Length: 476
Ligand SMILES: Cc1cc2nc3c(=O)[nH]c(=O)nc-3n(C[C@H](O)[C@H](O)[C@H](O)COP(=O)(O)OP(=O)(O)OC[C@H]3O[C@@H](n4cnc5c(N)ncnc54)[C@H](O)[C@@H]3O)c2cc1C
Image 1 (cartoon, protein in one colour):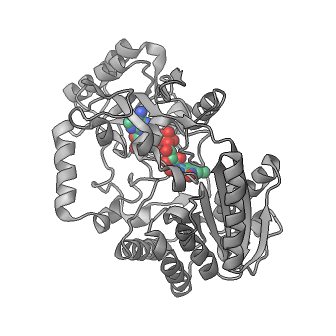
Image 2 (cartoon, helix red, strand yellow):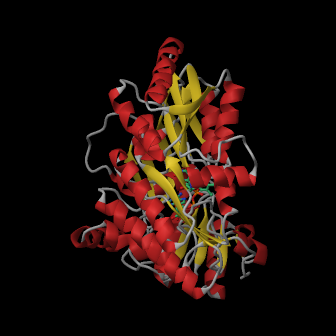
């Protein structure tokens, strides 16, 4: 409970204008891309690590909950104050502090968006590969807390491969400087890695030291259409023997292709089994050679159509097909149970076959698309109504999806994290001792349990209560 006295003390820390209880501010900061609203009692906008440390000390003294917010476009409710308390919005920590070409390092505050960072480094001939599709809105702090990935991660890896150091505030209010600006560092525990994927539960990131690469000189993009999903999957699997590693290997199954054609016709054949979007990058000469290999691989696996972009504008047109996926899929039902299970790349055909059978058996449409190159599939179980029974059957279907992913050697999230949306399924993915160790770490850092409660291993909602709803939400 945030009392009047606590409000006064929060205002004393950050300034009265940066503590809000206005209805529209509360509602906007009490949901993420799942669009389920759980109201905060106040939203606080600190500017510095010192202010954040003071807020956390106060939270421990007065025992109120704090939920950290980045760009608020997570898909698992991680930034949602499901148990009330305050939202600590990081939006004002938004400065790019340094881009250093010689050291291949960028130092940024956590509320710099992925897009801003990419634009700024590319203007200096540099490159920051992690590219979540939410790059325009998502913050680097949120990307780190969820270990975000994107299409380019096949070749370059996801966010964790690009974090050299972090400053963060612990749940009890100490400021920690972990790692540094050097690419090699064997000096003690890698505490910065503890924060990567920590979902706002172990600390609040306030400064990020990121590794950069030289910007690739050229890229080539192609779209290949296959008669069967099996052909497309064989093509993906075979790339490992081709001698090249594409930057991106994205797959859309037949249901997804049809969802796009229903949403905005793009000339894709509705009968196709799957399509692959393939991109290569590097030096101009090597990219030309890699593009030949891509074409040969697609022909070898029986692509029925193959289109290579002649220039960047046409490449963007091809990517536009992929970008339509989320809105197109959302139109195919009332509730979207959107999950991002991951399986070893070689198991994608088995997973797709399983999903086709599951769709028939459950009666739910299950459009599937995603990052085939690293086995990370966006699997959407679409519910046509909001009845309790439908929701329960939907949750049981998701449970089957996750159980299969785990049985195949994969896990329940490749990039979206667990938050509260996947918490009911979390023990499918971790062994009891692993779970216990995570809880021990959480207790050690956050003895009063004030930071981001109700997430990951503490299921605040039952599985059937979770899901993106295509309708207006109740207000706070
Ligand atoms: C259309 C769409 C497409 C997407 N595509 C992708 C994709 O391709 N790849 C992908 O990985 N994800 C994707 N996402 C999911 C999501 O956008 C990303 O995971 C992104 O990293 C979330 O960042 P955010 O700043 O919005 O974080 P938020 O939603 O604000 O927060 C996410 C979590 O991070 C914590 N957090 C935020 N800031 C900090 C901080 N400074 N310190 C500590 N913890 C913090 C929060 O407490 C919360 O637990 C997509 C989402 C949408 C809506």
